[in-house]
Image 1 (cartoon, rainbow, N blue to C red):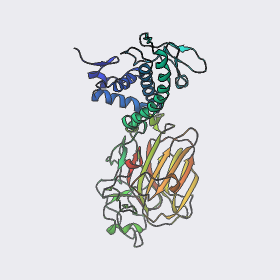
Image 2: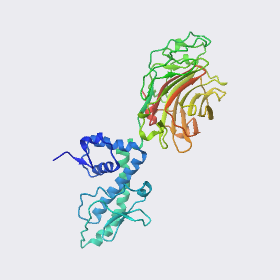
Image 3: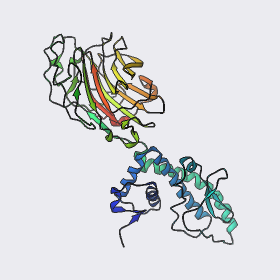
Image 4: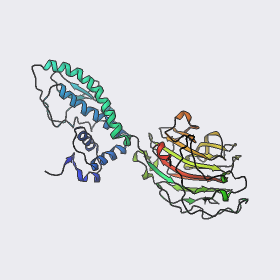
Length: 439
């Protein structure tokens, strides 16, 4: 015998050829029929499911329809048919038409599919099914109808279980896609108690290229540069520097400790530093991308990072992490538009902060920010937690900020400051757990 085939693609080459919908459905059918599915074929199916959120929904309907037809064949006392895996020619239908498909069984037990509401029938793709008319046919049909109703309910539960267990990673993409813990050689800071005039104007983190999920190294774009600090105790900017107590770290109220490295980024002490890095958007699932940037409607991205400012002073001073650009983006940190200097967030449109929301926490306090960005048609939704518990995804009701933002996409991260502040452990991922690893 030759090598096994499922659909039109041999198993040994399936990982080299992208699946289309027909091939993906045949792999689903093969699994339901308890046929062998190779690891390569399973990987190809998983990749197809991740290409678009609708693929998981289509797979659900396929599982339901396949299993329901099998049940109806059994309870209608039909002769076994070995090729009923291709149920109908549905590939030419729109998504709306597919969702309205209705299974019809006439008095003779012959099945067909219609588009619902009396729409035209769709020819079954498998061979014509001949029905064996037993003397007890009426009895079988009566009991078959009752059992079929029960079967529908059972199959819905079975299909839901199959999707949740077999394809959960496709419908809920997860993974740590971007990370930087600033594990670069420490920079010699300016002398303590300085006035900021001797802060470095070259070097900084220009060209630093560690971490994962980035398209290029960091670049400095302002008159002064950020530095890298390992020993915060002996590198206080002034005697009242709030950052000199301990390195950036986080332990929640139940003792879980966020995984961190040992070096942190420190922004300039006036007038301005801006460190920028472009993302490798290919690190994200395709279903998250729109116009070659992150932000496809329907996708959800999680962000986390640690931050602490020199102290809580506001009055137009700022130090924030930004997703996106000054044309359209999201800022989290000490914001110029918040006079108190407390930790805040705002959208940005054409260089202006909008919908700013402030917390009760001083920016001189070290915190862990965790943000969930839900991209939707029209306005996007951002929920931000400060110092959440790390055991599970927090409830939206406990978020420090809930902000509606004008639609935006992003393909870069920047850290801008006019007030020396520290940042560390930047993570972008698909779930809360991905961006809050614990030791």
